[in-house]
Amino acid sequence: MITLIIDISGNHLPAVSMELAALALRLNKTNKSGITALVYGKEAALGARQFAEASGIKTLGLVCTPEEHSAMAVATALKDVLSAEAARYLLLPHTPWAMEVAPALAVVLGLPTISCVTEYDTETATFFRSAGGGTSRLHTKAPQGGVVTLQPGAISPAPEADAPGTVTVRPLPVPPGAVRIQSTSAREKGSAALAGARVVVSVGRGIKAREHLPLFHRFADALPGAAKACSRPLVDMGWMPYPCQVGITGTSVSADLYIALGISGSTQHLAGIPQSTTVVSVNQDPDAAIHAVSDLIIEADLLPFMEATLVLMAEK
Ligand SMILES: Cc1cc2nc3c(=O)[nH]c(=O)nc-3n(C[C@H](O)[C@H](O)[C@H](O)COP(=O)(O)OP(=O)(O)OC[C@H]3O[C@@H](n4cnc5c(N)ncnc54)[C@H](O)[C@@H]3O)c2cc1C
Image 1 (tube, rainbow, N blue to C red):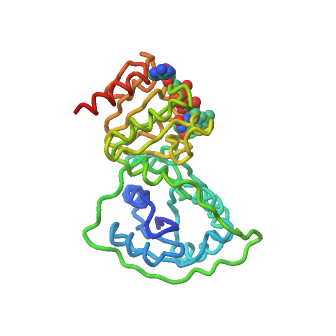
Image 2 (cartoon, rainbow, N blue to C red):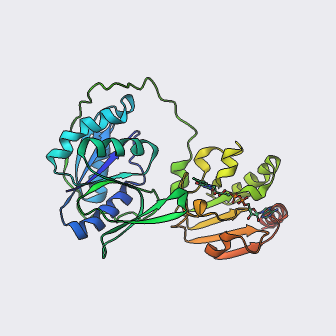
Image 3 (tube, helix red, strand yellow):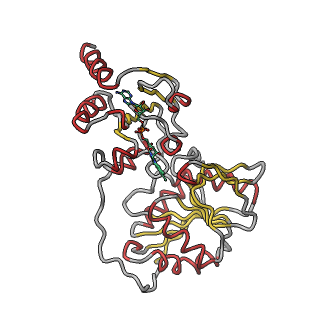
């Protein structure tokens, strides 16, 4: 059995849920073992209904409070359910929480892990994975099954199903583990909005100084509905919040338009934009790597470019 494992922490399913469904459908073409889903968390009843309706997949909602428990305690609680389902492939999103639960599940079920998957080829039954901070692509086969984490934004979501899947809901008792989480405080929001944005304006080290950032914000604000993003150095320097980081260790975006301002185009950054339709790069270096994936290259000095564009937009 192929089993999707989705944790729901708010009132909405994570955007990656339907991408997991797409991966499961592809995997089922080669394995033909069938697909089920587990949605767990405080709002599991709601999440399970939403997911079954959108995906058409038979879904079990497990009501629990995973945020109070260690990943190992959650994995131990899920073990019996997964064993009863004869789950061979477990598919989770490559998100910080799932990245903790996935290895714990692999330990309790005795399965290998296949992490950070970006693609699955049905012809050769091969998982493609990003490794080494995006510097390598691993071709992996796991015929006996495994715990698979999928990079958000790497593959297109499954289409909406014609008919809903069946839903069952029950509580999931989590045994007290050696570690008990006392409280959780949310970081700045942004990733979810960024991951689903149609237009993304992203700034890199080419901005040169923190005092130039207000110009970037004015530029991005002038584009209706645009989400703001950045490369990692800006986060490392504390100039932009982490949820804005695009790339292998940040968020993956699948925008219709991705505008890269003063970004060189490292493999780690490009790993975050594989699904973006049109890429526009503004860079003064004619040999910048970002140009290789750009549909429109603007060879210009960033600051005068943004100033001049704002003036033109104001005139329109
Ligand atoms: C394990 C690991 C994980 C990583 N994860 C990520 C990640 O998730 N996301 C990420 O982004 N990076 C990540 N990195 C960092 C990555 O390797 C690069 O260092 C980073 O992407 C470079 O950011 P940048 O393009 O903004 O800066 P730079 O590479 O310094 O590029 C700046 C660009 O601005 C241009 N420029 C300079 N001045 C101007 C100007 N006046 N006008 C116009 N253009 C100008 C330059 O020509 C250059 O192309 C990771 C690295 C490692 C090792």
